Image 1 (cartoon, one colour):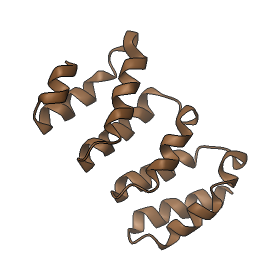
Image 2 (cartoon, helix red, strand yellow):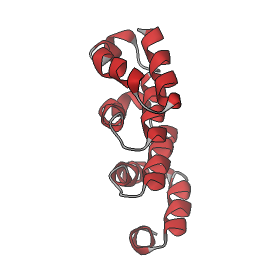
Image 3 (cartoon, helix red, strand yellow):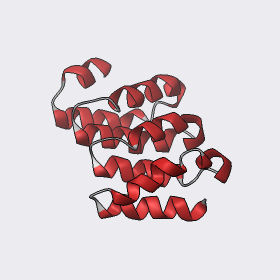
Image 4 (cartoon, one colour):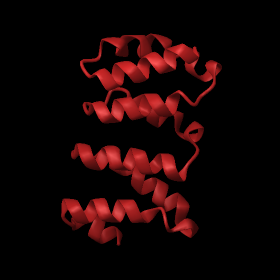
Length: 122
């Protein structure tokens, strides 16, 4: 399956990513694949990987992934990262306040809205 993921078409890759979570016994390998795909050139595959990572892990265990995703070129990824970060406590978010405040000037309204929600929690 991993070979098909590496060499398959975009649609095959997406289908495989969406089915990897079923392999509970290989959870660490699945998480590794999702983390790897967060660096993919394809925006949709990066977005899917971030969504799926959130389904198989506790967001708090991957805080740095969500922080790094705040600078992704895809606004869906930035907004999703903000929504995941909003689940963190005030202490975990206080160091990110400046970065999140700068996101209020993001060109995408969904990102601005998500940034406002996080800032409300602070």
